[in-house]
Length: 334
Image (cartoon, rainbow, N blue to C red):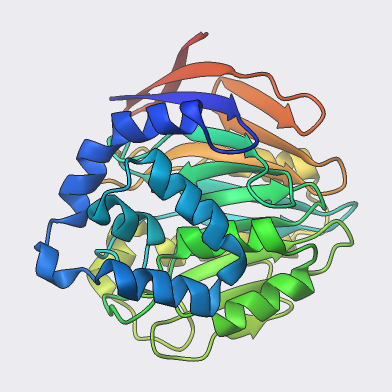
């Protein structure tokens, strides 16, 4: 199994984004229709919800819909309002000991990752982020030094709301600080349980537990997140398969060790239980991303290589990563 990671710079979405859409749309269309078209909201509902909760992003959304060909189905999909359920793994930690940083492992199936790191300026903020669902964000940073990342929250429950990737996109496009991000997360509904880690250049940070139909819980002093929440009963089979409790305990142990250095912390993210090779079951670690809010840089790591991208120096290109049960190996850089 392999992923082609691609760094793309395109301020306003145009031909580059359109080519990615054409390449990705068949698979996303199958996923979006996996429960039948009747399960998905109408375009009018999607647009109304976007205008109600994230009005600033509507011009960018409409531009993407045009680039996608203007079809009703693509427009509904791109809103990410009430999409089909999906789950992943992931571990993330906010480092504060010398200067703020956000470290995260993204655990998912190699067959389902976009692999696109997009530098853009859709609204007023420059953004570098791992793309998801063509409009959304898995983790990212804006030019104000605001950093965000997500993990699945570990519950089967599905409700009325947005997929978390578009909420993170909205935060990076419109917010300058952790406090502003907190306000956005408190008012925008999500369709599933997610944990969101946020840190800014001033070392203001928090972890948010989002759950459909409930008020978002902001935990101001929590610096770690895996794949469960404090107020919801564990989905036990998922918890075992994803090792969420073991990963949380490992992160807590690392944070409690006051002698540990930043490099030692990074190395721990390349080792079990934080690093997983369970790619066949969809819980393998696909990349480690490290966000540097002050430097405004993202570093992407694999076991034998790394890739550094920033707002001042963003070299477009590709990295081809081959995944095996024993780990990941870089094949080539293009």
